[in-house]
Amino acid sequence: MATDHSTSTLDTAANGTFLAAETLEPLRAQLRGSLCLSGDHGYDEARTLWNAMINRRPGVVIRAAGAGDVIRAVNFAREHGLVLAIRGGGHNIAGNAACDGGLMLDLTPMKSVHVNPEKRTVCVEPGVTLADLDRETQTFGLALPVGINSTTGIAGLTLGGGFGWISRKYGLTIDNLLSADVVTADGKLVHASDSQNPDLFWGIRGGGGNFGVITSFEFQLHPVGTEVLAGLIIHPIAHARELLQQYRQIAADAPNELAIWYVLRQAPPLPFLPPEWHGKEILAFAVCYNGDLKQGEKAIAPLRTLGKPVGEFVGPMPYLAWQQILDPLLTPGARNYWKSQSFTQLSDGAIDVLIEFAKRLPSPECELAFAQLGGAINDVAVGDTAYPHRDLQFLVNIHTRWTDAALDQKCVAWARDLFNALKPHATGGVYVNFMPEDEADPERVRAAAYGPNYERLAKLKTKYDPKNLFCRNQNIRPA
Ligand SMILES: Cc1cc2nc3c(=O)[nH]c(=O)nc-3n(C[C@H](O)[C@H](O)[C@H](O)COP(=O)(O)OP(=O)(O)OC[C@H]3O[C@@H](n4cnc5c(N)ncnc54)[C@H](O)[C@@H]3O)c2cc1C
Image (cartoon, rainbow, N blue to C red):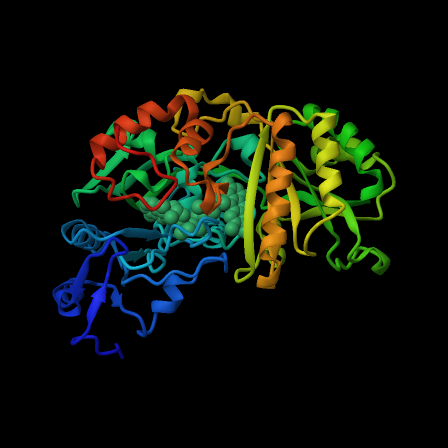
């Protein structure tokens, strides 16, 4: 039962636009999905994001059931001068998926995943999570390179780039995007691919939600698993320096089928780890080999010869299981602040900084998650997609996470200090999907997130969204 708002005035925009609630009624009547106001069933569910640091109250939420609802919502926001926020999986750390006042367009009800096993393609709606996608594609022994936390939304992940365990073999998520349906700022549904609206197709491959609302993605899939060779090898942090120095060569020699990431954090109570190590600072290598399992054993052998691990759990396992293995450490509802730095090489100086900060984590849930990139990701030219960072070998996510609000200042300060200390060793670029709210500075978006591709993006923005209707993102300003 919807709350009766008919006599109220609705603050629908942080920019001072007020609407009589009855203005919404014709819109409500046209929707296949639902329209929720504060107090309605679904309102809080829609506005609650993965990061509990974000608590925004939209003036109105439209929970879209299809492209028709998206068009109606975009037209309504534009015609009434409302701030418009778009929600896919709700995981973005900056929390742009929700707005104070304004109109929040929640795409989570749009959950269709359709695999074509012969063509090895999949069509995905924007409310789909990585778990939804992996479940369908693995039914046919296929997969798309996506992220490492299964509750993440495919929409936001794709629009920023998207990398995970099999990206060194098959590229970024966007490198496998074949086409998309996009509702543009004028409320038109257009198809974007290499042959139709190729400029828009270029822009949505890394340019975030700046150019329109994607109502459907079509991706190329690849044969994967269904078993991969994967797991964790855990060492005391005391040996991290020499281990990471040796890791450098092992990572450089690794075939594209293998990704070796590492994490510096306090050890969770893993069943294969002796209890005396639980809660102690550790270096954990996380490996995933996607290919022939015997070849995989050979590929990870050099890593296994390193040092004396205090715990190891590596073996064949379903790709689906591996895709969800880190979920318990990344559940929604905690307070989170992220910073990230990117690297073309892992210098001794960077290793020292990482270890120094890992020894004084401000909360037991914080971690430094270090991804190995390279491989097929770097086979694409800088100008081929809006995502420009095609020379990286590594990227660290300073994943600061805690539950007690009293720790806010301490945790954020730790992350910023570490970010600054890593600066001399990093490229200065930033992955747009890892930018927190306070990195919204246009100059950082221009120089660090998009660099050489920014000017072209700004021209595209002027063509497709000259009034910047889609502004709740890492924003590209119209030229
Ligand atoms: C726990 C966790 C793990 C992660 N791991 C990885 C990883 O391994 N690899 C990786 O690459 N990234 C990873 N990320 C980052 C992730 O890619 C981004 O947070 C991404 O923005 C999440 O997408 P979403 O749809 O869930 O988020 P949302 O917050 O819903 O969306 C983010 C933004 O994308 C835009 N948007 C969303 N949907 C649409 C649409 N249909 N049309 C137009 N614009 C839209 C909007 O601007 C929105 O504000 C991770 C994030 C988390 C929280």
